[in-house]
Length: 289
Ligand SMILES: [Zn+2]
Image (cartoon, rainbow, N blue to C red):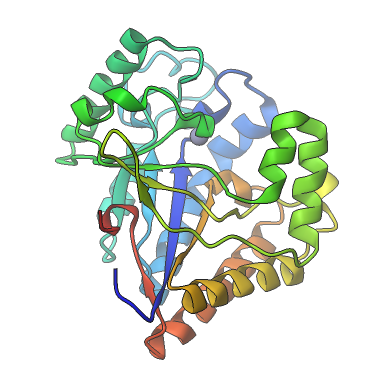
């Protein structure tokens, strides 16, 4: 990593209905069928116009036309090689990471189940000549780190370092409120520095989730979100660290226009700092060991 610059990363978890496969609900299924493709196309277009490469963490079952959920509602919610191809065909060279094969629960799955899941994901990525070296754990449940090297992973994303995460570990509802307060008021946002773990993997924490809007989150405004992210980027520059933003396309299901406005405002700010050679955009597998 260079001295005297900051870094900016985006990682996106692409999962469609697999993200809620443990608890399917209509709101999510309808949007996965009717909104997700438009949102992804728009993201791809925006990244092209701002020249921003990102890391897409993909559920590999989306590439399997015989996957076990294909008949649960419309197949478009579970199968999306079209989105994957659009990412691969973009004129920006994005990074493809794995978000597992079936978004299984790593906390309750045993080694055999996780290994089978990895093998299936590798098989389907390979069909597109894609070899993944980075894992984003489903639901950010970090487990089975000792077998990652065996499946050629060198990098993994870990969780937000923000204070509200420690609140959620105690109480989920209190955690939600803390998250809301955290996003509403200009509380310090963490910048991150990847670190190598005892298995020789590079752990890349995230700084912040670009949260969904609507519902109890109404006090969160583009203004408060932008101020937080801007100060995170500034801090990354000052500290020679990284500001790592992550989200799902589903975080754009509600208030879609506002969310895109916010994203563009962030990318404009990134490019302003890039033009002054203060900031570089980095994909998750470009961090140095
Ligand atoms: Zn996920």
